[in-house]
Length: 395
Image 1: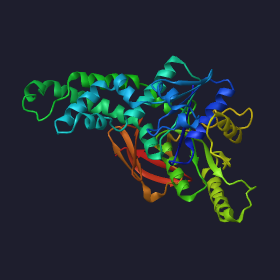
Image 2: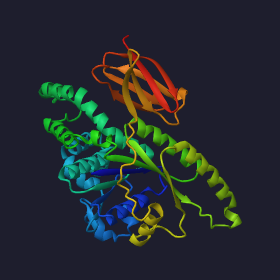
Image 3: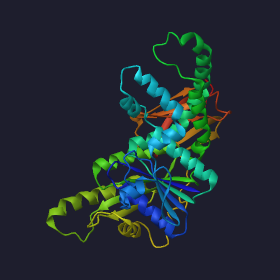
């Protein structure tokens, strides 16, 4: 199975491009699902589906044709399916503060619930071998980072915090319950968390396998959008995901000769030159600005023709280069990370337990070290040719 993540700044056209990719995949014979991971869903709107027809079935994939389905994760239905005990506990705590029942139910939808629900579906469909390709229409860049980092974060919590927290509360609950200012979580609450973790088992490895998962970054030929695309490239690399394509959407066609757009064309030409230079050797595709809104299947198919050649398969594996590797040379070990666009002043690192922690700006990445390197500490680091090399030696 192939997983394709479409990510980028809000408003660049991710949803339309993800939908067009789904149509191209299904046309080539792949059983395809296009899934929206953006809380502000617009996938059904892209296909111009009748609201009453689609939204009655959003809890499950909705068929477009015999080989293509779309899925907008409905958080209310997911709470009933997967988050019942967790949501009930949060609601009970919020009620003790004087918040009304309706407000408590709204506030009990915690950040990350929707993304984790989507991951559970991806894992489920992989196990069932229901689809050949899943196209994920991701939320804007910051939320996409949260999406891909969740497996690592949850695994760390389950390994380091969950057993202690569950055991401690089980021991003190009978004593503390009469005096606690709010309801303490029951063991069913922890069982719910453990069950969710089981449903996500293996999803982290799946996302970091470049033969399975690829990221397609969507951008516009505008400087502000380009800067966010560059940051996204770094962040996905740090999280172990392979970026195998950049799509520049809404490029003014050369046939536009009106003087009103002359400055726009000059600006876009400069940005396109920068994009080609920045992302080499990652291939860059250009999609023109259409004369009409891309809405409905017919126009999505037109977009697919602009994006892909007739027989081009979006599911083809074109890039498998790992964003970080381990090596041994001249008596010491090295960790090598691909950090395109990072500068020396932005990079920080330190050792924590058996992990190497790398920071780029406000982003932190925990890299688990192999047993042969777990007792070593970083002694020197250098950033050259977009690669950060960290020497690991005995302290």
